[in-house]
Length: 310
View 1: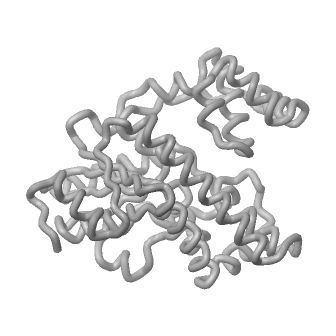
View 2: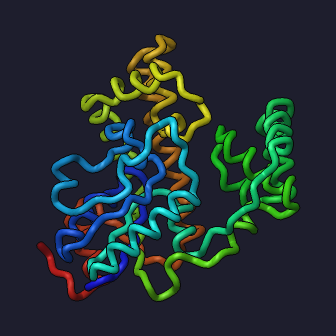
């Protein structure tokens, strides 16, 4: 198992972090974060980052390394992750990359092109177009030139919609096509992957229960601190699932029960989008179901005979 790389993907609340930690325990591995929101130090509770006790069991990398005011791009994560993976495997250790951000895994295994810098007038025009056209019309126009991006980008994600259009407007090439080019950090044969995919009703119940636990653990206080900083609402950290909903409670616009219910709905929608991505982009990865950690571990070790139940 020396120097190997495992990729473990899954929707929120699927159990991927627990599986990754158990694998790291079994092989003496190191864990690398592939979740775009767990990068931010400000969001330990709301993004279900590993606890201090869990981090003490195995080396963890790229968790809580960024301030909420510092928006990380896919390219920045990829460059940093490549360095970290090189260091881990260079020591002869196993790297376990775990997260729910599908584009991170795609960048690792398929490559990510260096898109030319977009001129400021083009960026301003794209932003103005969004404001004047509205999301529906703007998305429709984008779909004529980059249907994959128009279908992939979540409702309400203004930043990514505008980014996709400005890339096309500036280069004449769809962002989705740019993302198909470039050499992968992990060439074929250098890694093994597994995607967690619990039954939908099980996953949704876990999402709801975890939101309740997050509120008990201090998620509201975490969001209150973010709101108090008056950060740009378009920053990635401000778009983390649950931030907008709990911020409405912090500002006195709704009750805690209403905010929590709204956060649960958005979390379930997010989990559904993550599973859709997995099916479309990771169709060849082995699937792991199971309703509890023991069953998930049994299914995982079936992929790797040298591992044992422990």
